[in-house]
Length: 552
Image (tube, rainbow, N blue to C red; front, side, top):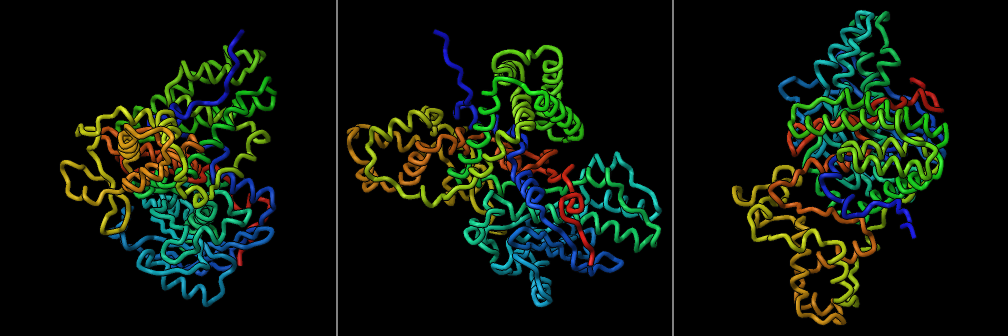
């Protein structure tokens, strides 16, 4: 009897850092969810405040008006000397600073925000604000665009494509930081239920501000005849972002949320693979997605050796896929999408496989978009430990989900070479070298593999029917590992199945996985610990949506 097909990937394969570090944005990415909702619900947009002088200093307000609520990006433009411009988190001044306001701010709100928002961490906002952010100009390109428009010319298209943004954010804070509203205050709102919707809205409106600012400065310099940025060039611009280790531990600290992100994507892939035919519309959409991925991959550039190798793999994988799809793929076979996927697993690198996944999902919106509603998580509901669980059941979970960790020699220096800690300067996560740097005594509990292996050893000789409460009463140090084991027993994609303190662990893999779920493109690592990316590149602007932008 032939073996039944299975369309779902094994978490042991999916949750390895090498694969997670090849993630690509999909139509389930959070910025795509935001754009679809605003488009389908007919949101309106305007700019009720534009008080920017000829030097590009002042304030502006951009409103997004939904069916029930309004959100306003309050932007402050500054005159920043070149020597103060830095992408580092320890910077204290920026070209622009922003807050996403819940509602429409009045004059008093704007004055209060003008005092605090430019200070960022040194200031304080209130629960009326949903996010706090800042951005710096991409100086060479920004100045080139202003000069070109002022001379009634369009900027060099190749320069715009090379960089891809006029400004890049260096932090977008939300979820209660520095006094802003906690996520719990907004999570029941339909438009905010998906993860990071407030932050994505802030960045999307920031994109409009960056274009408005260069056009304003061009008019101030060149007069009323200054050109406006051509629509096709404008759409090719996103918002850059520089980010580093500060976001890396997020995926470890939020296991249920990680599970739901990965599970939604894996369910989407399984649904596509289970389709018995390839419709003409789906085939055309798939080819369009592949071509767009090839064009996008040509825009990526990096001097980092790891990323250069991955870029080569990506471009090669996309070329192989296009050749296979157009010349050899039998679209009339049984389960053609599954056959294509199985070909990719044997013929493509990890970069190529994950790019194929994103392209396969793209034309199947009706089939998979609803999965976006499953990507949030009530993590508090899964925090309590079940003390009645039997030791035998716990052993079974550890064997099933932590086999990758149980045989690791955590006495070997290479397997414990790193430690995670919080920096004193900015209270941000950092990664230290255990045998070369001080501070390991303040290590964060992100060594999930080592903890699971220690819990496994603690179970030796314990009767299988013993409640785990007895173990934890005697050895409370194993509570975190027990909690994670119980979570992963119900959420198989909750754990990264790699040693996060090993000498060869690449933090950039954590960053890329999370940023791909945001919807980021053009990954440009500057080391294995920080990266520049672009958000909303190619996406519509407010005036291209259902509503219109109306200047004050």
